[in-house]
Image (cartoon, rainbow, N blue to C red; front, side, top):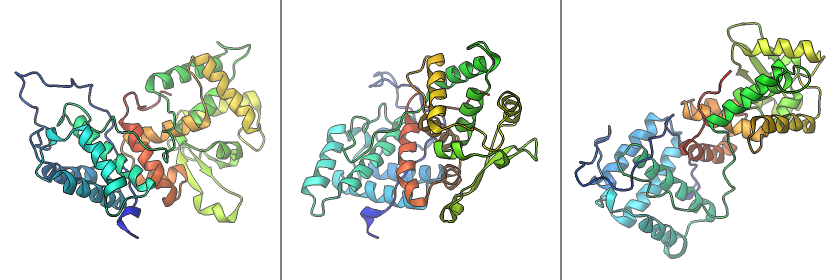
Amino acid sequence: MNDDQKNTAPQLPLFPADELPDQPKPSQQPKKSSTGLTPQSSLNQALGAFESYMRTRGFTENTQQAFRLDMEILSDYIGPGTSLREISTAHLQAFLDWMQDEREAPCSPKTLERRITTLKVFFGWLAEDEILPRDTAAPLIHHAVSAPLPDILTQAQIAAVTDATQAMRRGDIGRRPDARPHLLVTLVLHTGIKKSECVDLQLNHIDLTNAERPAIWIRYKQPSRQHKERRIPLPKWWPAILRIYREQYTPRQHLFPWTARNLEYVLTGVAEAANVPRLTFEMLRWTCAVRDYREGMEPDALRRKLGLSEISWYEVEVKLALLAQQKGAPGAPPS
């Protein structure tokens, strides 16, 4: 495997720093971060602290190696002694143009995309830790090879959605109490399972043997997929919603004995009631993943929870890192 083929992916703190002004006031001294870095620190000094940051945040070894390589190339291009405050967005864009068009060994579009991500994570960390007043790499644009980042719910939207499903459960919205929307939304929001896995979930896949640790089992009929079978914990309060739902619908085998399209209509109704633009299985799944990521779930544990292969995890982890850095990314959902 050559260096350009190494995997990448970042992991970020639970709560982002507040919005910072573009320039500090002249009377203010630069705030010294917990790393000891300041805007006057050299790029080389920052790279050492960045490696400690990656280890602390639990980056995978492949991620650390790939990020280290990418930043070493930037250091060679800009100069390891260059201070952090001297590095502008224009410098970073020139670096990317050089790698793509002028370097003796131009990188592939996929590798270029990864290196843009590396810059965004590195400079995003500097801004987040208040080492720099703003994120120098924020204006950089991912190239067309990148799929758009998936949509996730903000904390305010999560609250609006769960308030709406609770109202539906009580009968405040609609002609009769309906626990199905709340059961469905909270299930996916806490487990991150796929739409197909939700449709295939059977009653005997729900493990209530320990009242303090309810869970679901994701199982597959195909022998080739049995290695993806996994147990996913549920909140302690979820079985109570399940009991209400079963009294209303009396399912016999599958938890949700409807088609995927029908369940999508349920989510559409919830979105309308909650006054959010839209609500889909993918949004709930990614919201769950970003929340777990920000709360520091060990990367391999999160990969297994989502049922992803190590190859698939590479791209997913990169997107999680970028989503987790956004303002308004979700925290813990309400019950």
